[in-house]
Image (tube, rainbow, N blue to C red; front, side, top):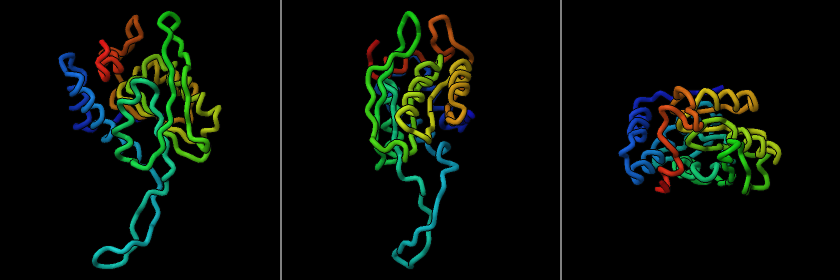
Length: 207
């Protein structure tokens, strides 16, 4: 299941990110801000429970999240650009890392790094990557996490192409997808159109 978050503030910031003249500094800051805002929608159905607290005035029962065992998992390298914003919303979360790159000839994902907490079977994993293009790397990352025991995973991206959505939903129908935009298509080089270019290059200034 995919959720396209159409909040006006998110859409405004995404438009600024798409512009080719947007600087690396501004691109990073906007991505961080959008990631924080997307967490609000992503956590809309998270369970809460009543805890007794004491305010300066009186004791009361107030809502707190039941879900506390969060692991933020950026897919390297571009996913690092989103992890900071999510981490601000979950400051006590653990951070795992998956390193995958797309072979330029075959367009297939190749794993080169993976480091996770040992108890991911008991955690909720929020996997982040700005672009869901072909879906190959994202699907491979989700498969890798499941093979390591992950049972509850959420995938969050900035921009998605129909092709990538189809692949992830086919391979991982149990993983909800949250995105700020479902774009038109992929071009001949597997870039999202209209997209925003190579997110990793724009985040890290490696043009």
